[in-house]
Structures are given as C-alpha cells and as structure tokens.
Length: 162
Image (cartoon, rainbow, N blue to C red):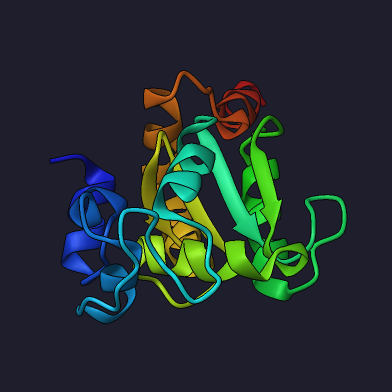
C-alpha cells in the first residue's frame, strides 16, 4: 500500500482507486440516482470525462482560479506548496469556469471541497492533506515516484554546504 493510500485510509479519506467502478451519482450519495453509464446526471461532468482529466498528467489540480491567480486561500496554498517543490508542470482546472466539472470532480472523488490534488491519477486530497504531506516529507517521496525531483532536496544540499 502506497504512503498516500495509507495516509488517506488512516485519515478516513476516500481515494479515487477506492471509488473505481462506481457510478458518479453513487460516489456522491452512496445510492443510485439513475445516472447510467454516462454517470452523474443532474448536470455534472461524466465519470469518464473526469477520469480522462485526472489521468491526463502526473500532477492534476482542480482549483478555484488559476495557478497565476488563485481565487481562494486553499487553492493558493496548494499552488505555493507545489512551487516550493519546484513543480511547475501540472494540469490545473478552474472549477469556477465549469459548474459541471466542479460537481463532477466532487462526485468522482467523493470529496466535497476544492481544491483537489491528484498524483498519477490517484486522489491525494485537498490543501490540508497536501500541506501535511509537505510537512512530513511524504510529498517529496510521492513526487519522486512520478519522476519529479523536489526542489527542496536541492535547497537542503545548499544548506549542508554552508
């Protein structure tokens, strides 16, 4: 079990892997609402559409605003944490521009809040989880699994040289 999945399990967080195969409407409510194969119904993005976005890049963030102009403090914090680690190449989706995507991603992850961070297609969590992973060093390890070297490792080497 990966550290991310273990941390999510320990904190009682649903992961994208744990929701695989469930219709979008069931992911949000636990009961069928008649979304069918397209998932969701009720004006939310289909499970398949959300899945394509989540898997399109190793690091994906669903946020309010853009990395250049976050529109909430939590989205800003996620952007800043990624910047600290030198992660500049990631897909960011502004859910304020697409209400169907906003509801679709919440249903997909069974997580009610934005921002949401995905690493290698796996739901990590929101700002609080990413901050915790940053603080305890787990984010460095998870980025390494994606082939991304955290800039904080270079900063530590520079400190050691002084």
